[in-house]
Image 1: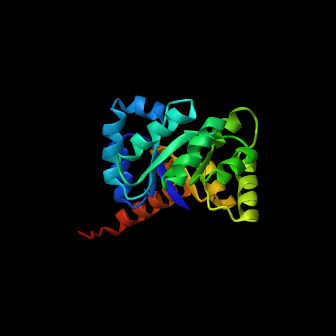
Image 2: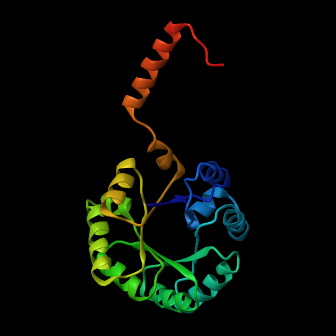
Image 3: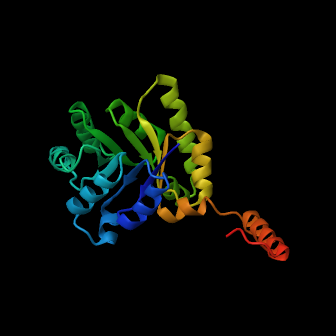
Length: 217
């Protein structure tokens, strides 16, 4: 499974990137706002830092404007994936941009039907939002599983990018189902390393080591 980092915070990306935990980055208007940075400037910095796709999102609502914004964002770097919303106009923009050879991430997906349309429109990535489905008492993982089955049935190349991941269980279940990619905030990725039994075992080892009176260095 590929790990994308869902943030526009450059320092957080750099820390994970040094550990080989970054296969790409996703941003959106809310994350750009949180960073306090200019979208073109911070996206360029991120794209230079990581080798994989960096999603940069359009903000227009009509297809022609989305296409124009997407083309401008694509000029930032060769590894930009233009992010468009899963609306009818977004699908139109996806088709045009993907036909031009541009990576496209279709975002705000909440159903397998939507994901099927995105694949037909040539999307590179489809981003189903797990956490937001959970918020309205729907099972986000069922949607991931449905999309996986449909894509496998027909051999679609569109990669399932599990998004709106809020917990380590979301990450595990997405991998178990077979999502191609997950995008998660840096703190969720770090929490995947944590386990109470690891902490307890380490504490025991260190106490026993202290009793030996030995030193390694």
